[in-house]
Length: 472
Image (cartoon, rainbow, N blue to C red):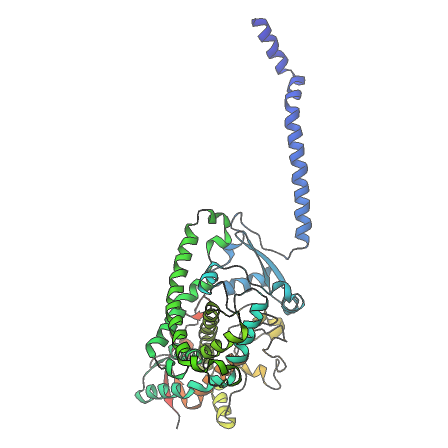
């Protein structure tokens, strides 16, 4: 028996036996090698058709390259890795960054129909009722009707004049006392009051507590609506559901707060205007508030539910308050740093009674500050470049010049272009026409901190405190 076992061991250790035992392993390795080679070839073929991309980390992708100010990080990465297009992988999410007018035209005009819808957002689904607003709703018939409703009846230039004089009185009081004014807060109040007046009407908007509540709700909701959520980048975390439950709970609390406020307003309007609803379509007053108009439109459009109405109203607050206030505040900062430009604007305002197009802050990505399109002073505040004889005299902001797209272009272009520009020009004219502005004692314009914080709208971190002086 021992001899048989010994003989078996000898046969097993012979080269021929090892070859027989290893043959299946060799076959498996060969098969794996062939598949891996084919997969690499397919990836290479795919990569040949993909935009350039920075080196990525396993699992994270390029998340480590995106800092606390994503718009600044993306501009820097685009300059280095992809002048036209650049592919980033944020965890498991592929993101294509468009960084040149040529590429922007291809995406926003030539292939506009492909990119006309928005990615799914859990926050928008809850806070914006589906979403049923204009900004986040999928491209389709409902979105077209909602956009038409907003642009036709709400975002008209005439409405901008409503609260101008009230703001002048507020600044005048501060000027009489020689007190410093928080310009950001002043401008935020102006745009908030304008939105409240447009939505609720003259009498309802005088309720200061309600107006402040609207503004606070916008402040509380914007970071959640515009923030990054981990499960979007790492879908496998969704299996555990912990993070999504937290986001959902916050979103639902905010929705309840919006519901309470908006339902009360709509109920008030329904009871007030019910007797005249039947004749609404032929007798709309230009000064009707937007809730009144939506109640009329509910009859015309048929499928417009109360949730649709509330979602559209939310767009007015998210799109019409922070954006205009941020542009105005940045404009004032630049004017303070360039006294020559300030004096020129004031002289022009007195001479012709209006403002000229000039200040265009907020373009932080590669296109809006690319020296190859704007020259070596691309980072400088030079409003004269847009005036007659300037290097960008022929460049407009309405979406036809792809090197400058502050309102976007194509199907998803901001519907509030005319309204937004009117808000900025009217308020800027108010600020510079009746008042001179000075830095507080011991401060210089060069001391103004331009640090930013990221959100649905990019804001300056620090308050802008200035002292208004009444012009004589």
